[in-house]
Amino acid sequence: MNKQPKYRQVADALRREIDTGDYPPGSRLPSESELSLRFEASRNTVRSGLNMLVSEGLISSSQGLGYEVRKHEVFELNASRFENLTFPQTGDAYNTDVTNAGRRPTQTFRVEVTPASKYVAERLKVTSSSTTVLRFCHRFVDDVPWSTQATYYPDWLVKEAPRLAEPGDVAEGTTRYLAGVGIEQIGYFDEISARMPTPDEARLLDIGAGVPVLLWTRTGYSEDRPIRCTITTFRGDLNRMNYEIGTLTAREDAPQ
Image (cartoon, rainbow, N blue to C red):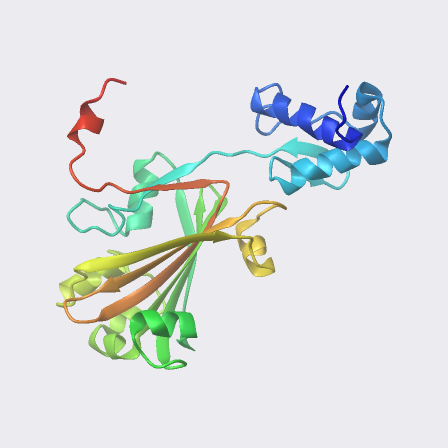
């Protein structure tokens, strides 16, 4: 005898059917009335089961349109190669990586002067609330919100590389631009964490209930000091990151 509450039985059954492909991404689930008949349960019970799947990020609900299985066309980012100037690029790293994956990149962009938060100041080794230039990108892959990227540059660097403060995009990418003016990024330190989105992040990235964000902070260094702090916020359900460390010939030559 199944001792699980009825709404959990509903959720478990539908979850299995989503996992096995009975309801593929983008498909609609039966109506609450139809599910009530199938599971011999009240609509409130069925709705509670469906809300479990919404909170897990498996399905989404729309007023008047019912429940739909969320699409998860994951984009894989090679973080080792991202912004690495030894690899060929056509423009900045984001455009290059998305285009090479056969996907279509678009982004909106803004530049502003802003005080450094404590988090950013610690990484740039400047005093808290000191002036930084923020270059903020809202990025999309195939018109689907993919990430936001906030890069902070210390005031001293902007004086040496004034294009950082210009409102337009830097076509060749800021890392390549800085190298061209003699400020080479020779290393970086990455920090990766996950949490639930803020209301603003959920709005910008069109995140449904139950979907976390992946936070990637990369602090770039010249030979003697930090030159930028980049905080990228990804939709947790549509992104996967990987790194290449060491010699990987065994992986590359392994049979498929």
